[in-house]
Length: 110
View 1: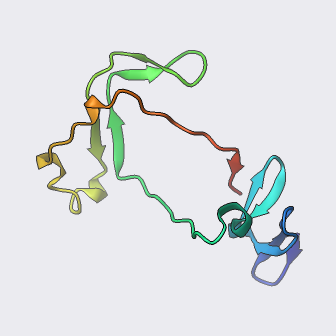
View 2: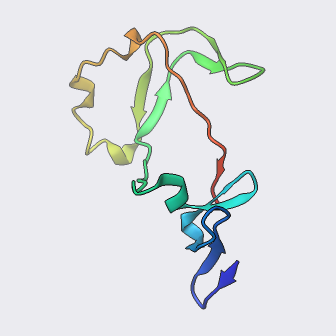
View 3: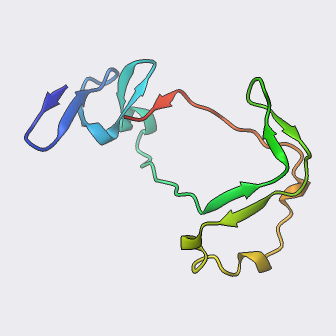
């Protein structure tokens, strides 16, 4: 890791170029820069708009769920209501989806 007066730089374990701290990710205990990770595609941030409410709970073991499977609702955060106020009028049929998968990567943000 190299430092300047205002920013910290890390050396990428793949391309060996320096990268700013906010553009480096630790994968399997090795620093990897955003260019090696994403290529020419620029990553974007996703901010939550609410909380999913349903009858499911986490299972005691593993990543599965337990409980009543029904229609899930999104309870909007108060800050999002002015922007998504007509969301309740929209008709979505997410409950007809038979399978939804979650993918967990090995990225640890610093």
